[in-house]
Image (spheres, rainbow, N blue to C red):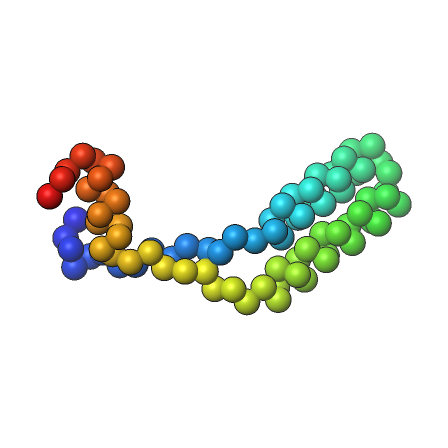
Amino acid sequence: MKKADLKPVHMPSNSWTPIVLAIAFGVVGFFLVFEWFTLAIIASVGIVIGLVANTFDYNDGYHIPVDELEKEEREWRGDLK
């Protein structure tokens, strides 16, 4: 790979919403498997809250600079240039 082809890598910031959504989807799925539709509808509120909260999370994350990527890659491969 040519040095000119390298670009900073965008990394998302840490967030609590994926954990909340995973738990909410699991609970709703459990209720639907056993056909507990009333509880599934009530638990679906957690999914809606998680999606709305994620919508208003304006943290754009951060970028890893190219020089740091090159340094880490050289260390990982064992190149000590």
